[in-house]
Length: 283
Image (cartoon, rainbow, N blue to C red; front, top):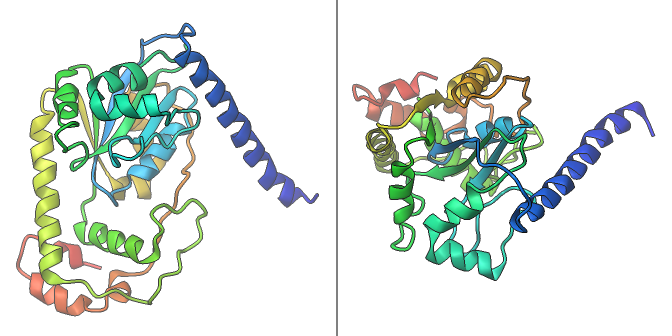
């Protein structure tokens, strides 16, 4: 085995061993093994294509932090996105019918003593069905819940990223290799762009107000991507966690200029000229 192969294999083995350890610990917790609830509780709030996977991956690199996935994205399965968590019929029944109890007993439950912060991702449009609506009231009523609100300044890039992910069916890049689109460029619809811009800003404002009584931290994807080390120190301080170096687990999916990626870029730039969205086209 070459040095390069060994260098690649060791992290994979460590990752597998760590996942197995997590599964054992989680099972012990489910069976009532003594743990503790004296940890910081938080959510990562936002929408798709704003860097929430990058942020979550960085946080999960910290030995004292557990960040679950988009729990309420899909009614057919729990979005744990974390090793060792159950999808049993009993768990799914609790998840569907008693989401508040599910959060209190299965998400914010006992954890090993070294765990100092536990959170999960939730997007503005998650948990909006009748059965799940109590989730939002529960979160607002948890006054000690910390809110990391992740946003993106350039909403054109958010919209483009979503369209590109739909085209490639690649929603997360864990390899660092550029994704191969089905075509070299995309044509974006003006009205659809405008609606997405307006809806996203409305969601951001609405949720800032909704969680105004909570300890909150606003973080922008652009800052995180440009200087994740400094931004993560801010996040860890906000969560009352001892800082340590963290390494990204996901990567940008596209590195081309907007004018090279959007087929009708010049046309859209002209249409949005003089509007509050014009700055998105400063490529």
